[in-house]
Image (tube, rainbow, N blue to C red; front, side, top):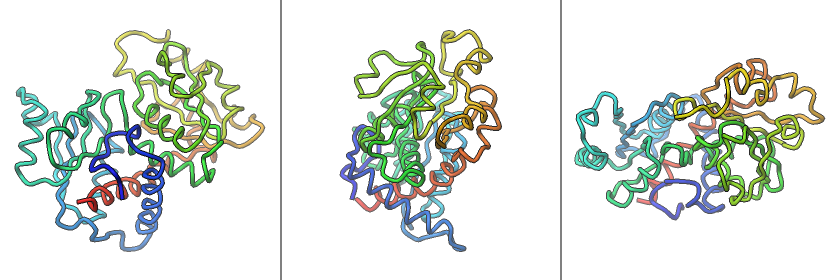
Amino acid sequence: MLKSPHLLGIKDLDEESIHLIVKTAKEFKEVLNRPIKKVPSLRDVTIANVFFENSTRTRLSFELAEKRLSADTINFSASGSSVKKGETLLDTVNNILAMKVDMIVMRHASPGAPHYLAKHIKANIVNAGDGTHEHPTQALLDTYSLQEKLGDLSGKNIAIIGDILHSRVALSNIYALKKQGANVRLCGPSTLIPKHIQSLGVEVSHDVKSTLQWCDAANVLRIQLERQQIKYFPSLREYSQFFGITRQMLEELPKEIVLMHPGPINRGVELSSDAADSPHSIILDQVENGVAVRMAVLYLLASRG
């Protein structure tokens, strides 16, 4: 059983909880591969998907996970709501809760928004991404996908390459990987590596080729232009020249590595199309595992009561 009634971030999870979620996700993945993919585990549980930021994979993945568990769902998107009229976050959520909702899956542009809500409301909260802070379910599905390929992650070398500064995926993955004893190296332009990030026990490099030779798996992040207020590098073309990964680079490595990406991919920038679609890539496995991991999280939180 999970120790907390919420999933706000990987920072608050212990290794035991990570293993429990992954173990439960494996069981749900078997369910998803059956002809009848639905289980009655969350019948009569109502879940609200409250998205204040755009999302494709995460939102669809949560909606599908909820339906597979037989939960009742309501979907809320800020763009067509009273938030545009000036309603506060707490008022919005309290109005949804007044309709007798048991659990809230929330994505918000402000770091710490789900933590703030957790202090003020009784429902279970799942953080589906809060600004540039954390994205716990992505790190959990990445952990599951890596374990499928590499087994136990203790002592494995995992690289996270790209826009670390604006990435909630990077921070959640660092926490998850370090808790499982993996070695983590961040790679990207110096302007996109946060200051003092080494205090989390990670290495920093600015050389993609040597990082690819070092690692067992590379998690490649997209350049988040929508979060960048200033120019962090001269052009996308130049970024691609120095930090883009091609299939040729992967095939020249002394060993085969696992290639990951949380999506959406900017093809031709951080990854060439032939790299993204290569046998090294487990990007679509990550999407498949995402549904099983989110089913596991929702099920374990609901079973706490």
